[in-house]
Image (cartoon, rainbow over all chains, first blue to last red; front, top):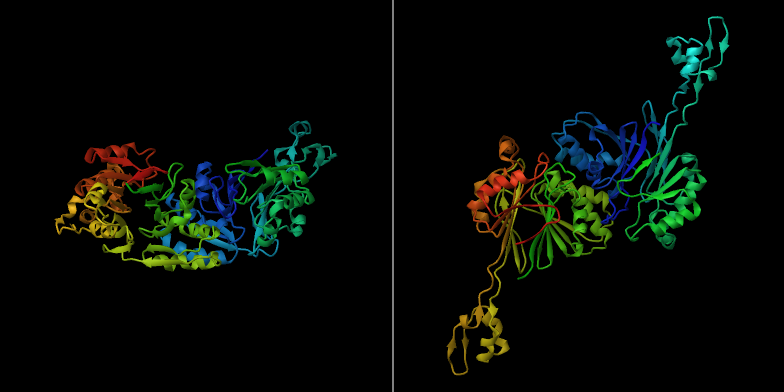
Length: 304
Length: 304
């Protein structure tokens, strides 16, 4: 199994507590790191989790509330002090560049690398990043300001080659690539051996969805259908549902309903309001609806 | 003894480590709080030290490098979420308002209180704050950008009244204030009793000086003369003196020389470079010159 993990740097809501840092996560796909949100202190937690700053090239910002992006200038500045030369890409609402660029101009004049802001429209679901093993698609959310979640999706992998059958039919090395791509094999005697003799299907691609901050919003369900892991905000408990609605946040039960409707493998709840001394009440409310629920915590490493 | 303490929130240099937060301190004078510098994570440490956000009204920023001020937007935003209505004053270089105001406009539109930037000229020593018990004066420093330290100085206190003598001479209550202010007492018989009979001198006012970031700079010595406690940056060891000079920072030995020349009561060294796995080498170098030296650490509470 190739590595596909999510590192939780912070899972509190806007008001930090002695227990929770502000929103930030790092997706590790085969040792490439992708940051989601960058609340104040993200660089401190990044270091505390012993993640490798050199492996980080893309940062995705869900929305422009301070608790999701105030860590950017400090992180960018630290990467410079560490001697980075590779480009860094910040994927965010178009305003991010307008807001942060003057600050970077002032504080990071000597930066030995370039920061590029790639803007996306949080109102529609679109592919905003891909490389040979990963696609990142936005998930339009419903919040007080334009907000998007992110779907991290592995690309389909090549099937496994069955070594013994390759040897048995004396398949030349030059043909193995074609077989990996699905071709049959024609023997010296002109016999056609079907592809399935030589291959076992790869594991299905894994998917991770990050949905924070958002009110209860059923339109995301088809986009996140069948994800292995869903991180969904669960700021409030049922008792504070009015407050959730008013602030365009979700209750734990609402997060669980979304996970259930989307047929998610597991639900991780986070973005906990500071009003709850612990998250047991939120967890219990989610578990009633969706048993495969776990609460996020700082320094948690999730296997997708 | 009335409370005069310094809380160390962070004492690392620009690159945070798993051990050190970025520069920030809180001076507590008789339960009024004054923040000095506000590196990323200052609000997290403020809360972790269980300081009272409501008692904080003034923030003093030594210079506009990110590791001394990137925590401002998050702290300001959190104070708003906590329902603050009292004004907050940020004392800093004139550029601070230009740089942070657009960010506050964008992220803190609904702030229920006002933030005022009071600018000072870091090139000259001037009184930038006073109330009935405290004066704060700037200390021009020598750094890559305009930088000032801060001298926190208690105002002279009233002498103590000697209760027994007041009773002995039947001094009426109406005259006690005049005696506190130094007046003699004239008895019913016309006899003049000198003030010193009724009073014991108050403790001399205490002084705390914060000097970071700065190269070795003798011009500060007369300004900080006789402080009870001096916090002076000691970013580098003797072995890295060339690097100190190049970056306008000080070595631990230089910090100690300043403390000695200024006749400081105690020296606290801080702003440690991330290159030293512990500060023992820096402490040893300072101790050779100035024996009353201690290293700063996170969550340290210093009595001035």
